[in-house]
Length: 228
Image (cartoon, rainbow, N blue to C red; front, top):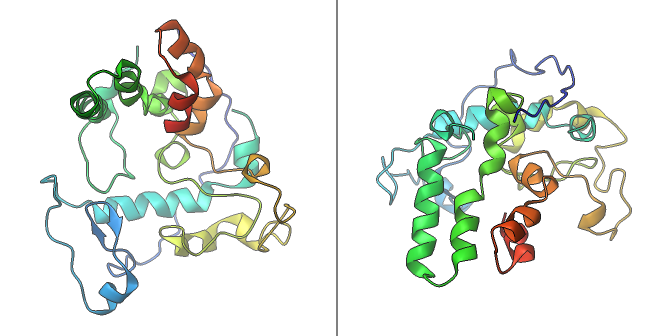
């Protein structure tokens, strides 16, 4: 089965705009941001993390540069049996292995800790299947449109978002409708009414994975969706 996904012509905004790489902008240790106080003390991340993988700082930062420039309100509202050996998540600071390895490792780790929760083993196995959007058979979307952290759109980009500096080149940051604290929203409207940047988790939710869980006799489809 092939799913054709209509895509807007975004012109790959920001592809040619280079922002100097600042190694002090975000130092990663095991995938967690290092507190500012530690950065000021000239804390340096080790060459490898606790899993034995080399840090991918420059790859991760370049991913977020392109992601933050192109994830706009208009992009998200425009519309919406894969070989995972070909998919590597550029936003992951710890893992540069194909996604099939990540899915199997996740499922096996859960099975070890929760041997009687078969629905949870399955959830670990399928939790990132939304990354099929990277595959040519499912539209071949660019990495910035599929992986990475998500954030609210239609309002100012909060400075707590990783690599916030790249939002300077996002058109929404210059749009007076979107660049105020509340933007298009009424304070207290609730997250159900907030548009969030597009990604693989959203895709999984919209593809109604609860139906798949019911077909596979999962015991808790609502919990599965929450985890995804």
